[in-house]
Length: 145
Image 1: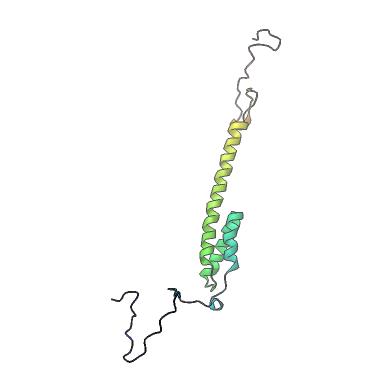
Image 2: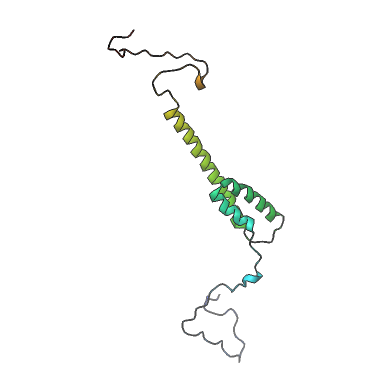
């Protein structure tokens, strides 16, 4: 078994050793990639990812369209962006729905009732008759019923 510093094949006998790197030169472990040879990036995948943050429904719709194109054999890059945008679109849509439900519940519990303390007929509960309380003291200082 060889270590990372040892060559995988032994040099041929009588061959000149490989030249030593210049001082301060570092080699990367990854090969150099010519970007001209890479397939183009799918713009719809990028729209999916960005749209998930701005309008989550755009991320969901574009994500499904883009992933369907990839299943048909689309040779472009960006599948990961399409998947991430689709997932984020669903997450943000769920968060918006929870926020709307919480807002509606808050609005009905804090502002939905009668502010003067008088119960009224009907409303969301159907046709129930609630007693309207009468004040104990009249505005002129006398006693009420």
